[in-house]
Length: 487
Ligand code: XMP
Image (tube, rainbow, N blue to C red):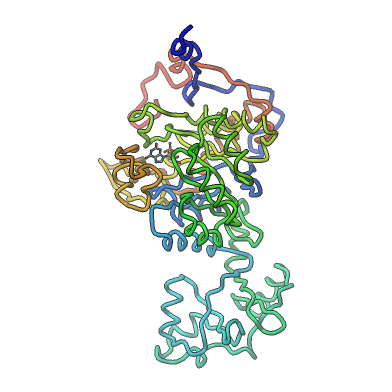
């Protein structure tokens, strides 16, 4: 038999989200009790398996904050300058925390006018006053500056050290809360025995903790966040690592000698966890994990994205469900499944697709389209014939490529083609609304399968193949649906 005929006889079946269903199994708990906590990297857990795509119409700081508060995690896009991306990350980390470490401070000689400017630009209402580096000498709040002469110095309007309520580094959250309530203060500076400022606790942060019990947080109570990077831009990675929990190597085809080499070097230089992607085959995952130690996660799927034209233009793709299966097989072979999480990325249209990806071995699902439609995404909102839409485009589209910073994902100098399209997605309300819908749907799927949590879903899930003709039967049919309904 000739080698080409042999290739044809060995053609693989590549299943996509539209081809498979999950078969029912015995349920032992009700859907609401199903636990969705999962790993997003080797050492980081999130409460819901939802990750937002690093795209400039999807994940900026607002969406990352909103998604982490609900229990997922956002990956900040990199289609901007390093400074802008770092600023987005700082914003997420500053959104709330048990103890703020990265405290914005002023000096006694700062003018009231400058302090007001700082408060406005960071949207904060109190600033510790320090001299000689970190020595605390007072605190100035919005109330102190609001009606003061703008030329006065902060030392003339601040609450001086003698009248400050402070706590030491050993203070517990409950004690801090009691102190603030007793003395009716909203900010509690944390100092060591030399009066050096070590942090700040605010009543607002403590209240937010209660308001978002599902939030994905780090050890200091700050929201978890990730950032996309190029493997060839070590400088960006170094600047970001201080503010993010995970770095996601964001290239369209990770299985590339130069990318692997550069990532191997990068992983050694940064302390944040690094996720590799995008990967599509078992060989790619095996090579990645054997050549690069300390890869903390895998982002898989090539060509399934709703804005993606890679599969059309190049006829090369590893659809997300297939890529997930390939990665799960590779991890199983290495005895690492469950240890290193798989993030299934691209083509997810609804909760059923998320359930399929998780059942196939993924730990979390990455979504662009579904989150692009939310209020918090950075894209523009427009109305077309009485309906609202938000702008959404692929990172390989002409539109995104025209913003130079993105060039290395889809357009190395040798690439002259667009691999994404530009358009609009229906407005879906807030991230909270979308997450609520996704959570309910996913719990229902897992309930039917009979899985109490994601690892149990990996064990219990059984798949069925629906031939093209059959797909009509498992969606509404033989009924007239009013315009706008699902069909
Ligand atoms: P969804 O289906 O959620 O997919 O919109 C989002 C994912 O699509 C990938 N992506 C692209 N793929 N050309 C591509 O081939 C592009 O222009 C493009 N932009 C984004 C990316 O993996 C994202 O998470």
